[in-house]
Image 1 (cartoon, rainbow, N blue to C red):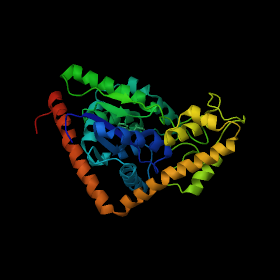
Image 2: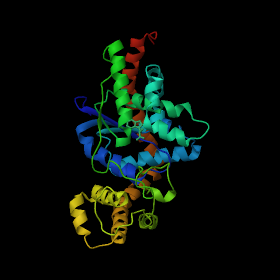
Image 3: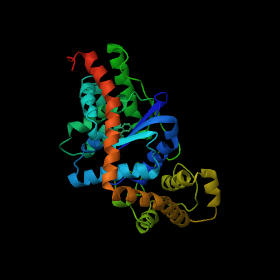
Image 4: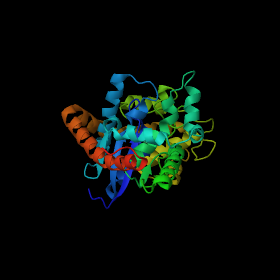
Length: 332
Ligand code: TRP
């Protein structure tokens, strides 16, 4: 790993098992981009506890996520992978950034507004400061590029604002990062509610395809996918459900949407659903096998993660130390 390379950082929340949306929207892009960058990819377990987690499941899901990174083809020659909670500097820098972020700007975050409106009476403070922790994740590594879904763009802008704010006060502490929002596969939508992103936390169980789903389950979910009342397969604004199925196929096969639409002329929605299910199952089968292989050797997985955390901490500590010094903490 040469330090001449630009730095890329990204993370996925290990709430539940990862979804097809995480795979097509994030992981596949990481794999595609990794050779050109020095990469840090983590499972954001500190972010995950902004909603209540079953302890055993959180640990399992964190290992599942990281095993999936490896199974998807993340290469340890280019990338350091780890659990966010294993690198203490994330939480430490987040505290400092909390003191340089404003209530007003955090209150404007649409994800906070969405999530807090669903949280009921008691809204954890962590949900409010979630983007500040994300900023710490990114700024610790002097990051150039952050591949994220379109829904995270606002958080990236906040990250840039806070970095610029602190650089203006203290001199250059942080690289100001750029978002990378991929076009294809950027937004895989919920199968039951194709106006919302496919997510582990929302909608019914049928809305999200989990990377651990067996082919039968995948078929069931696609067969029941919500479409609209028409009959013709077209890529139209008023057909979000059909568009989503076409996007999924295109993200997996690399075929253009035009080409796909042509191939469905004269066919019914049912064909599209069943064929999408088959394409997804075929794509996930080898990924699932490899993930299970990594999970079967817990000792080796732990070793990879410990090594990853140690490498990440070394890099992160350089930034944290500079920040502590600049703001006037006594030297240690
Ligand atoms: N908030 C991101 C999401 O929900 C996950 C995340 C946390 C992240 N920290 C990050 C993504 C740092 C990129 C970089 O998708």
